[in-house]
Image: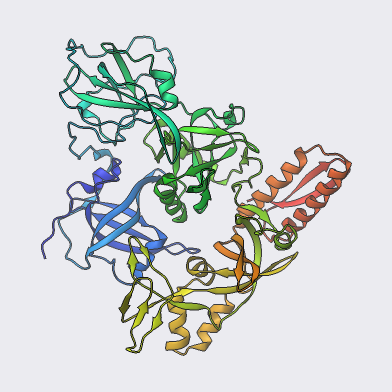
Length: 632
């Protein structure tokens, strides 16, 4: 069947496109990585080729043959990242259009020097393509029905010979290049427009699920007769509403005034600022009940920069499922993206952190000098440099909803017995796995973009039936329901692992393990698979919540994520913890407690069997301890 690949798709993606959903062809598939299976693809648009990394959640597409050499696929979610000074496409979601096809065209490896903007620019501007300074703005094409003000034609803007920083409306080093309104598009880095205000709307107030707010809009007309509407929200209203006047000419630019993380620690509570950093961890999205009784989502991630510090960034609402999910997938694929946060709100509750608000904007791997400098630093030295969190109650590299605990602390501190679940991280070893009912029969049907996964039963006709979907089908799916016993030096407990965390523990799907035991009757391989993960150490991210079982309340511990221990990262965590204790100046009672904790963590560090060892002196009040620790 003849098919036309999307022309210039590779060039557009390298140039920043993330929305065109192009058709491309797979020319090569290669398995890479030893600790985690990852696939590298060679993609073609019939003229150019470029390497791409497949997100780990798409590995099954290769294993089942849905994606192979010759396949024509449509990229749904994707992003271009720079890794070790090379561009690489990260594929987060895609659909196979033609499973197998002859090689289309005569493609050659894409040269970045040939990158040009291939996508035509429309006269209008899409909703998020324009921002006023330090704001979240929306823009769309303005009709000709504006106030009857006829502006004079303005000459082309010439930057002044001496540049002077005028605040957030200007860039850090020099004014951005003035471009026509009609030339604006979502893929530009820095830009500026010069235009006259032709109409200004009234100040309006609103109330929605996110709270109260205020908004106003104004229309612009430039010398090329390009028109656009700018909308300002909340804090930006306070700054610009009285400044904007009909008939006057303004220069408006897309600008960031990035603050290093070291300055956030001294920033005022509730202040609005821009920050840029490397994403070093992303936590699962969790439901949160607001004071008004409405439920929303919260996702916590951590950023680090060249200042040697890290900060917690809390995403709220749609940010969790949109940018937050994309960041989760990128980090899970083994990459560390750059994230620029515009108009984040500072919170000083138990340390300093940054949160999103309605006017916040997030930019993943932006094309800016700050992002390039940060990426170069991280690839050169930052990846192996430890950072100290200014969000004090959070773990170094962790978050407030993932406090590190021991097994015994789960019971001793009564975790999970409040109205809300507790989210903690426990480093523990698997000592036993129940194998009699390790999985259940599940509905394979899709509801929207998610699998139903409800338990199904077999009807008299040997077909499987789902009560939720009210449908029957020939084959069911199998999903993990593992009962796992874990233990550390303080005690042991039982935890439940469902599909994703079960796969992380056992290294195979529930269906594969079910077929191995019940269809192939290969007890030897089944036993080998189970034994292969016993007495291995993991960092378990746990959700702990009290639930009713019949008439009895029990604390249920669910594994949200199971990561094999990265000993270099774990050592940095322990060293940061020791450093934190060294900075404390406690009373005598506190000194005894602190000394006990230091003794405990020193003992843990000394058990790590790596080659590079160094001795650090820990001087703390009455304690003078020689600490042996690992340097990664």
